[in-house]
Image (cartoon, rainbow, N blue to C red; front, side, top):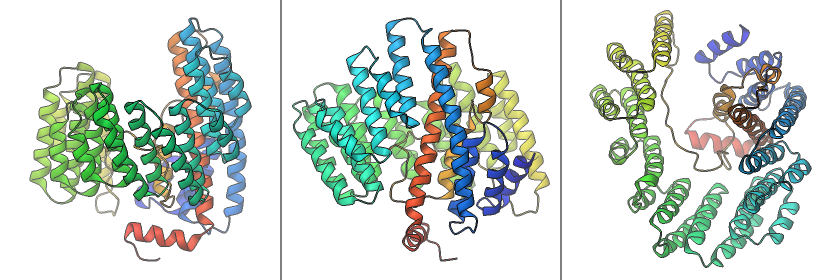
Length: 506
């Protein structure tokens, strides 16, 4: 109940330090909520970096981390035991890879290496070992990662390691070393005789350079990647390379260049991804007309509908009621043409919530009637009834409007801010992401009721939940570490923060 009430308070004051702090306190008192509590405390320290109790809060985070580590170790041990019941060589290979990845994410590098050594497939084992070394680099063990690069002969693995090392160096503030490492990676990419390998590698390097703040270097590398594309004879591989280049261009902020590159992608199985990414970037940049045009080019109805829904919400906020209705109409037309029954419900649900958000309650009811899944339809109806009751209760109060759609875009990077100051919104992304799905927030309850029927579905669910749990802790650890480094230079970070948001000093 305390958590529920503090969440209600956040709707009025989303970044109020005392609310964030008390959410951390409340969640820390429930077994299995340790990761969520850590994230709330992290948000509190972001909102109030000079908090008088900062040292005590950090001590509490350390205690929660220890408890979370114990949970995750137990979860991985259960996964190891379950893997012994898996039959089939491919399944065993996949299980070992999943276990090694989980161990690396929680810092058990010795255990991860031991597990990877048991993988009976050379390519999968190489990928697992690469991931382990990348995790070591992210943890700050640069020397170990550099030794691994020296022993690696595979071009793709070598470049992945060099990129991870360079980003770790940039995170530590050693930009000169990061640039030197990128040059080593570029030399390795240039040594490949395969244009597809070379182009993909250069696009990956460009993205990493942009993350590290070297946008000029990234743009130069993108030119190299584009030069390799015409030599790729396989149309699908060529499209995949162009997609990687689009991602790199968007990370550098070159939206115009990304649009030109998307136009070169011929394979419809590939081009919906960069089209979606470009549309998201256009929406965020305020280019509604451009986003509409991009949405019209999308072969995948789901992304077209999500784009139109987000455009409609932005138009509504800007006071363009007619434009919002027109965008919803385009989303409805796309949904009506969808033949995939399983896609019907989420598409019409998104449209209904968008109509609800802009105040078209009658239209929302019509869209709900088109939802074929009975459970989703009932949940949407009850959710809207509850929201309408809240709106009535909040009438006349200064409460922010809650939106129910989102800009869906695959991560262009590893999802971690490099140069931008850690903000409360970064913590909200963690809390509202995988930490807001099963087996969270009741991780301890999940551990008490782990599946034991030995089925492949139960094992697959266990693998996925282990991945989510270890990734969540990994993201929290990284964000805390980055935040601590940024707060070591508070004046510089404050100025960057204010300049990015166009704010004045408090």
